[in-house]
Amino acid sequence: MTTTPDTRPENRVLIFDTTLRDGEQSPGATMTHAEKLEIAELLDEMGVDIIEAGFPIASEGDFKAVSEIARQSRNATICGLARANYKDIDRCWEAVKHARSPRIHTFIGTSPLHRAIPNLTQDEMAQRIHDTVTHARNLCDNVQWSPMDATRTEWDYLARVVEIAIKAGATTINIPDTVGYTAPVESADLIRRLIAEVPGADEIIFATHCHNDLGMATANSLAAVEGGARQIECTINGLGERAGNTALEEVVMALKVRHDILPWDTGVDTRKIMNISRRVATVSGFPVQFNKAIVGKNAFAHESGIHQDGMLKNAETFEIMRPEDVGLAGTSLPLGKHSGRAALRAKLRELGFEMADNQLNDTFVRFKDLADRKKEVYDDDLIALVRQNEAVS
Ligand code: KIV
Ligand code: ZN
Image (cartoon, rainbow, N blue to C red):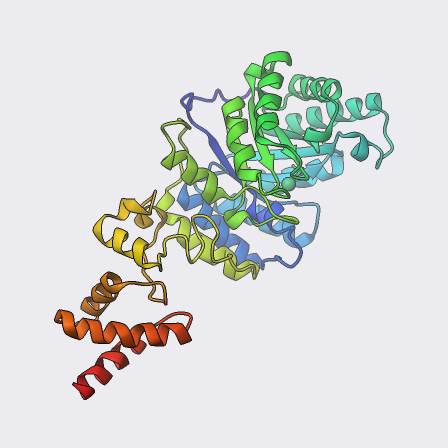
């Protein structure tokens, strides 16, 4: 079989979303069939390049979900996961083959710790990799191979098995930081060195797949791109095992906002980020932390007086991206005990109250008194304050 030449420009980074596979592996994040189809459709619409829709051999439900997502997808490549055995790979192909553009993703743990589990010698594992990638490639012309725990695999062995997988027909080699152990400088160096030293490496795409155990998944993914990776594997809201995977919204927005030093493009329509983030939070049952980058409730909220005053004068004082660019209606200036007169006046205006300075001062004193007792002062609280003021004056 021949591979289709990749005609995308040099500076294009592919976004591979694994919310429905690695994300769903998060304990307690199971989604229903209908929910998976809905999330896949949102991913397809927002412009991700590859959707890893599930692990077809894992259950009948996963098989059905991957098959149906393969049938419904209009734009994205649909990928399924398979361990390094023929049965898994055949089942995966049965599910993804309905897609306009199918991909088989097969993997095996290559680090000493992971090699010990199936109790394979280095040579036996190398043979297994050759045989399974060859088998996958005989079924599908788009094959991704991953050496699980790559970042804790000895360099010589990693380089050897990557070469074997490429020769056997893998079109994408994914380098997983399975336990979130690597640091950004290593992440970049590893990909750079693989591309420079492994024969055939310049013919295929390298992917980065980072977990967030030390909170470095986004930094490691971006560093890998600097090292030459052209596919980032990620999930919505960073959903995933333990501390999660690289968050899609973080890498995509980092590439957009810091295009000056990270000059790579994605095909993602960033205005669709908030909606899918909320849907994933709801269907997975994993709420988004308030201060989560990009999609947290507070990511575009400013409470303190100095910040609110700055924001009212020029949004760039405290925001590096426009809320509209991630699908929010606008910035929020919640009123609390740190807020100042400027934000109070702006809020009152929004509620239809125009006040002279002395009136505003009275209301401000009452507002501060209330804010000391309440975490957040809502619109109804303010309306009540104004009415009280009117009644005493
Ligand atoms: O984290 C990991 O190593 C994985 C592989 C299956 C790619 O998710
Ligand atoms: Zn993973």
